[in-house]
Image 1 (cartoon, rainbow, N blue to C red):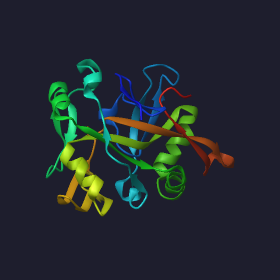
Image 2: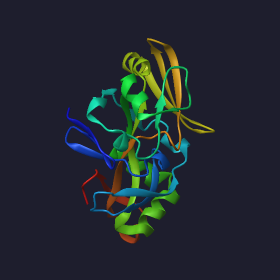
Image 3: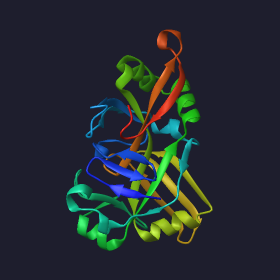
Length: 222
C-alpha cells in the first residue's frame, strides 16, 4: 500500500485521512468540517458520543509500516510531538520526529462501519444526531482513527486472540488479550490520534428525525 504523510493528510493506499486538529479529536467526535474543499480541511470539534455507545461496534485493523525516511519533521510534528503507545503503557507518551524515525514505529487503526455508525446515531447518540441535523452540509463525525504504536505493541495486536474496546473513566479502553505479550491495554483519549476519517449524513428522514443514509468523507472529498 502506498503511504504518504503531509502536514494536512495521511495517505494509505488510495485514500487520504485528515490530520488537521487530530490532537483534538477521538473516535466518534462530531463537529463542523472547516474549509470543506481546501487543502487544509479539518474538523472543528463540538462534542463526542458517550464511550458506552461504542461497545461492540468498533473494528480493529492491522499495524501498518511507515518509511519514516520519506517524512519530514515539519510534516510529522504539525500538531506537536507524536503521541505513541507501547507495551505496558496505557497512556501515550510523546516522541520527537527524530525519535519516532529511529524507533521504526507503526500505525494502527480503529473504525466504526457505516451501518453500525448510523444505528448508533439513530438509537443512542441523540446529541450527536441533533447536532448533525442542525449543522447541515458541513456536519461530520469521526468514524476512523489512526494511532502510532511501537513495534512490540504492533506484534501484540498482530498475535492477539481477541481485541476489545470498553468505556473507562479517561476515554476508550482498547485491550488485546492472548497475544505474544499476554494482555495489553491502551487508553484512547484526546491527544492520542494521528489521523482520522469522517462520515457525513447523506439523507435524512422527513423532519430530520432519523438518518436514512451516510457516506464516508476522506481528505480531498466534498
